[in-house]
Image (cartoon, rainbow, N blue to C red; front, top):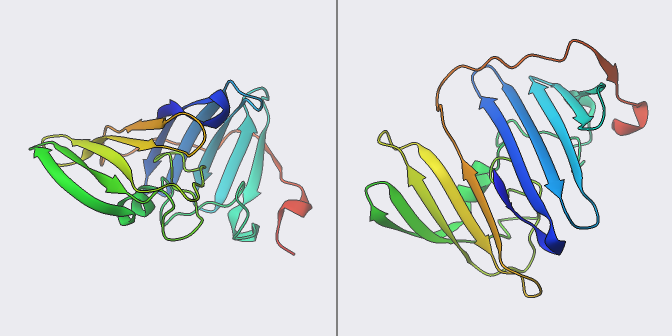
Length: 189
């Protein structure tokens, strides 16, 4: 996944998701702007492991104990990549050719939850009108590319592109060998 963000930032990410084994892995970096950041996350069942890119140490978070509205620690196994929220926000779609679809979607979604960029949902867009998207599929009908465009009222157009491959293949995602436990204040009271 790659794209440009507000305030001159760029986002790049890689990841993998195995819904059958309930395993998820992602590495995201945001460069430029005032607040660059980078980090990795591994989720296996109800165990999440996070670390910033400049740290060797992983922190374990028990997802059963995290507040449901915590935007930084929670994890949604129903829609970990934001793909379901994205598809439910589609307002119109046209088939351009056997493997390409274009249309418009509501980037605000049904509520204020983030679902963009697909693959690394972390942006909440409020008040942006219907926006264009393009989806490309492979010969089996699996989505291989999703490109969305957002046009904020102030600032340049944002373009986010997610590419996908190896649909249905089993993945080897393992927990880190060592991880410290998250501090108690991260958990619900």
